[in-house]
Image 1 (tube, each protein chain N blue to C red):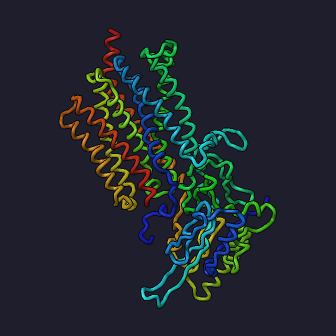
Image 2: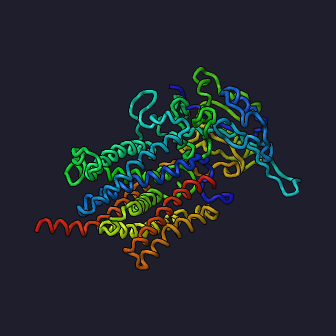
Image 3: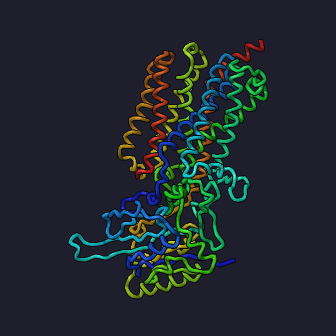
Length: 301
Length: 265
């Protein structure tokens, strides 16, 4: 093929730039934090509740930022609603086979869940004087239901972006089916890291936080395995990473974002406060660089 | 209901005059590049460079010469949207702005498009780009406005050598097949049709007669639909969610279960 390893190399880049890379990061944090918060609520101890509150506090602002970033990136931002309503018939616009179409709806629905849970968490922590909102927060039955459904939508928002890239014809993106999986796992690791970083000093000794720290190490290990599998699944297309982007992936994502935190963790810093926050900061930086590399490298081929 | 319409482009008779490019720009009132200030690409006689939001026709100049330039040939090809029967852009468009017309052609409705650019990443041929004036994705409409009043598209009308031919797909396929046979009989055994049969994206309503490999003309040898990855990509994502969920449950459940036991006792 004249040195071109795949038919995907004849497509044009959509010029998705910083706004989209940032959206992938914040969308992942929104979905991942909500999912982790709901996991803690549904399976953790009641003493871990401040940690789940933190997850909801992260999710809602991040989903608002996500919506703004996506709208600003459009060529015609005022037409953002065309994603949801067909502009010439005013009927709902929904294509189950187009990840961007389902994703727009998922983001809207998840945004509503994130808002309700945000208020629920504020009420539960007695930060707002509306005790009635506690009913939408676990352990009430309604609260558990909202957390479970919202958590599923959260994970959808975190992962569909990877599937969206896969359902194109660009090199790298559409040459592997594993991007959605990678984005989901990476969203979970980045979100756990951000929750650890934002946890109050007083809760650094919380058992729930130690659980989260341990879980993050497991998830980063999984993320490393998935990234290696993804590189292998690219086959000859992986050569497209034999450049500065590949180097950034190797040093920024694999080195700084995965291996270094895992080394710190397994070396014995399983409970040390400084190791914990250093680990979290490294994982978060790695998660951001991962999105930069994925978004930009496939458009500079 | 009209019959499916399209283009058959015989690259062997293209002379690189760019009348198609000019006719397209004029009829569709497409703006000039760079405010009309010409910049040379340095790539043969091609200063259009590629198809994009304001270039819906692009004549490619491929120079195949020996090192000393004593022997060689020109390959000339007027490129355009392929109006695929299974169109990748139409498939992913989240606003419904991309539609299939009664002529079986593919058109982006500029007033409905919001410039998300998903279609640009989806098109396997790199046909679509944003028009910087309108801010939305644009490409060849196969002169939908002219077709509706019984006229032929501006480019094929302007083509002086009948390299670009317009007509019903059935008729064009017949003409193209005859031309391939004629070329084979004349000794040009390399001639073949690209995209004329249904194997390629259900058939391209703008297909080509080529005399070299597709990639030499900048065409993908094996274009595919973007949704080929939808099912596998989705299932792998579900697997990821389940694995992370399990990790969360295992890590948090132990103490949660202890608490519930304490509560019961």
